[in-house]
Length: 280
Ligand code: AMP
Image 1 (cartoon, rainbow, N blue to C red):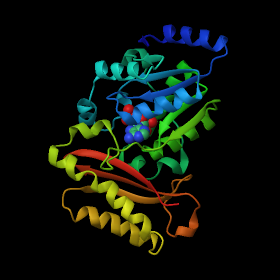
Image 2: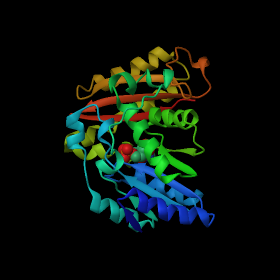
Image 3: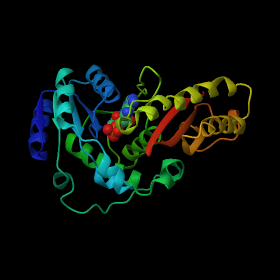
């Protein structure tokens, strides 16, 4: 496995691969890798000849400085995990390497970032778009792999490559969960023991909402999820929205869209957890 910190070195190796007709798969991450990240690498390995993983804690996508400061950094363990699954290349740039100039570009994602994470994390998706665009320009992948756990981010990246435009296949991969159902996240390691025991209630409640979605209204299901979690008196629900899976706009009736997902953000132990469930 080759580890790169400089853009020209990585680009030069990748251009050799391309000249030899190899397809490039790319998995952007912020490190603190877990099985969720590794599932993206596995998917990339199935579909591409060479796989690049980037590890970069992108400062400009953190709207909360404390979250950036507390973000886990476990580079040595990350590299061991990637080596163990035969990843080909890892790109670990510094902030200066990624942003030699201040970031000035702006993006218009229309309705997509007007809901859920968008208004609650001002600047977050602009920061995500800026880093993903730079990484795409450096790696020039054929395919890039993103988790459906960050459902809104995936929709925004699809929109980004359409807007730029860039000829990159964006592949969404299913949420990987712990045995008890908790969606794996780098932030889970910041939960207390008690928090970690309670956290699976988020997914359990989302799952219980699925049968209700066949006999109750959208509003009733929303109230069920929010009410069930809030009555445990440990979760602070930032939002739970039931949305069209393409436009991400909240629906008020199950007949309004073919693909429907529920997206939640909840605080537990001062840790912000997100999850997603498919209704249709
Ligand atoms: P992050 O390092 O949190 O920025 O995540 C990097 C990529 O891994 C993103 O595309 C995430 O959606 C994806 N990811 C994170 N957690 C999971 C998970 N539990 N299952 C699947 N993909 C995930």
